[in-house]
Image (cartoon, rainbow, N blue to C red; front, side, top):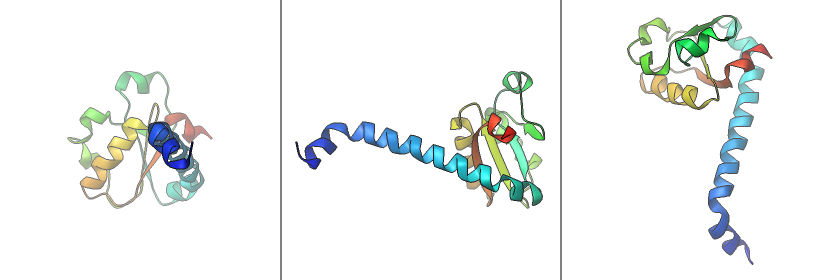
Length: 118
């Protein structure tokens, strides 16, 4: 079996592996940047539901559930970095796209909310 056959048969698994590798790498990168982001006045937003947030959250994060984010953008300043989190990093990834689309320049997805505790 040559590389082309291998790629044609297994590309979905390779793509999935690359996606998880990117999420892991990006989370580590944002964790490393977190002290500087906080020093620069970052707003840390947890986009999980209110019930999820109430069951446990990182100190200093505010809760704006993803489904409310579009109508509550005025609560997040555009002049400072924004760090987003959720349960797995998926909703915060969608939130990052929404914020970028609405003119936020310095937006970071840290993944799971527990990463703030590191």
